[in-house]
Amino acid sequence: MVESLYGVKEETKNILVYIEHFGEEIESVSLEMLSKGRELADQVGWELVGLLLGRDVGKYLDVVFAHGADKVILVEHRLLDHFTVDAYSHAVFQVLESHLPSIFLLGATANGRDLAGRLAVRLKTGLNADCTDLRIEPDNGVLVCEVSGFGSGVLALIDIPNHRPQMATVRPGVFSIVEPAGVKLGDVVDFEVKLSRDIIRTRIVKQVLGKQVNLTNVPILIAGGRGVSGDFILLKKLAELLGGEVGATRPPVDEGYIERERQIGQTGIVCSPKIAICCGISGAFHFVIGIEKADIVVSINSDPDAPIFEFSDYCIIGDVETILPAILDELIEFKEVIHG
Ligand SMILES: Cc1cc2nc3c(=O)[nH]c(=O)nc-3n(C[C@H](O)[C@H](O)[C@H](O)COP(=O)(O)OP(=O)(O)OC[C@H]3O[C@@H](n4cnc5c(N)ncnc54)[C@H](O)[C@@H]3O)c2cc1C
Image 1: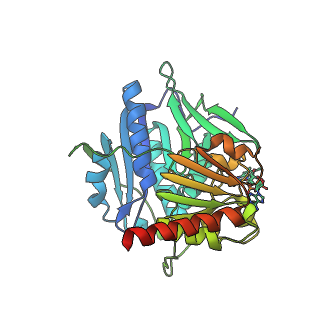
Image 2 (image 1 turned 180 degrees about the vertical axis):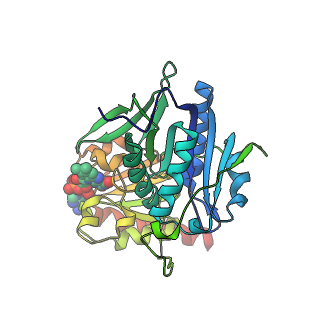
Image 3 (image 1 turned 90 degrees about the vertical axis):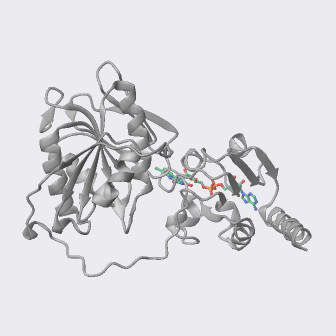
């Protein structure tokens, strides 16, 4: 067995969380992992440490501490101004080599995934990607990661008993953010990294923000599946009337009827809306994982035996092409009565 750069004997009993930021804000997934990390650290009596890299990132310290960190490792460098996987993996590697955390958690964002894979290879350790839950065995400090996978309805529990750090990525929306109870302070460790321009093989020429939609925290989700036959017009009207957003299962995304960023499920977004309205969706495990945190699920399906009904609070058996116009008519009428 290949040995990791450091092992169980050298580890320090702490959970390190990579704090990702963009623009003026910390990514919500980092706050979600701090909240989960706090819960885990309290269970085993370990320290929760935030890892903050960039340029002028000290401004985020208060938020990181308020969300549960006991300590923050602060890495400031002019070459960390924008994320490049070369500079960031070199910098984080130096931090890990020096601080030897037992557990290292990152958000399963585009950059987080890129970084996690490279670091796991350099550290010769294991990485559990896209975990849906995490717990620590109190007796031996082993992180047990719940991962759905193997292309079917299997939930696997995977651990990394002998290699360190125990790395895991978690997608946005899987854990809830525990809102800060008040001001909290902790230790700040300024860590100096050695970086030079020649290790960075990419050059940021310009940053252009696309028109993005983030379904993670939408209050109302109107999701369409293969049963809507590629026609999302009625779903968009319903979303507009209710103040929600449209999402989809994988088939309409793969067939190009709707943007990939709107895909819900295991390989899409995990969301936690107050209401999810599922139209023409069978209820495959891969999709359901993306809406199982919804407070209320309403499903419309022409097949009375569709598995989605098992996960639904309200089941409407019928053709979406008949049911959706009827709902829209009722809503429009209702709004007219309310607003005169
Ligand atoms: C590794 C892996 C990862 C995956 N990740 C995802 C993922 O992230 N998200 C995801 O969604 N899928 C994912 N899938 C695919 C997933 O397994 C299912 O194939 C997919 O969710 C099915 O989508 P669907 O319900 O739209 O289509 P179908 O299963 O074809 O269901 C269509 C439903 O529409 C109903 N219907 C048809 N016509 C009408 C009508 N006129 N009115 C009302 N109802 C109607 C039918 O009765 C049926 O129940 C993944 C698969 C794999 C192997």
